[in-house]
Amino acid sequence: MRSVPAKQALEAAVEAARWAPSVHNTQPWTFSISGEEVSLRADPGRKLRVADAAGRELLISCGAALFTMRTAMRCAGFEPEVRTLPDPDRPSLLATLRPGTVIEPDESFRALGRVIEHRRTHRAGFADVPVPDRLIERLVSAATEEGVRLTPVRSPQAISVIAALTRAAQGVQAQDRRFSLELISWAQPPGSSRKDGVPAQGYPRQAVRTSPDFPQRDYSWRHDWGSQTDQRAATSVGVVALLTTRGDTRLDCVAAGQALQHVLLRAAAHGVSAAFHTQALEMSRLREFMRHELCSGEYPQMIMRLGVTFDDKGSVRRPLSEIMA
Image (cartoon, rainbow, N blue to C red; front, side):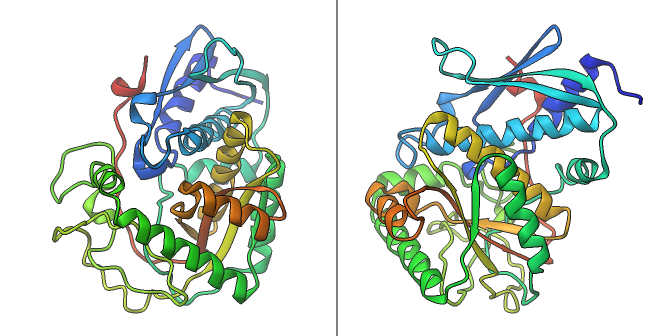
């Protein structure tokens, strides 16, 4: 078995973590390398103070970055040694990771590593192409490996309820100036040179309704922004799925983020993308309703739709110089 030097594996892990998904592409993390250990810290300055006052979505985003580092380290030939929330006196320190035993990475993890930089969040309907049940089963297993539950929603009635809750939350948030201003602060106009937030090519100028309708965030907000991709054939909802945890602690949120990225990379390796709908989860009463009525008492951490899209969107990430502490 051959592996790269430990320092090179750590650097590769941080480089890969840049491409993890985060709410509104806020990239709320910093990294530091000391000896043969990399630290992942939350960046509270990038937290959504209106939509995510408790920091739940920030922790999920950082959890996704942690799983990405784990994947990159396995691809480099090391079994990662991870400590999550290692120091109660330093709450922003979310995890440390060290290269452990030298391993021969299997093809399953190599497949995940190959799509880290190519995975994209989708913000519209999907093509009318079915997602194979066998793949859905593999995605469920991927979440289970991280101690989290992924539940495909098969009941049309339940899908309609989730869509209705999303529309309700979107409608309330659209009437709240604080939500709107926070949202557009992370929306990029065409030609922007910013390396964070949602670029104009990353969302449709005018969303096409699915049935039932799952509204997207209005990143264009009274502007003539967004992509003009022909979405007339992309009106399928896809497979609606809920990511849930038994508890709702900081550790649970980090675990949810790791499970989310495991699912997303596994899906991307098979040509399947995801669209996210967190509006209802940002309103405590709607989230509690979902927990009791749709999630068997577990805490909903993410609502997503999985499907096939033929759009080739770009993405942006901050350079290493901005995320290394």
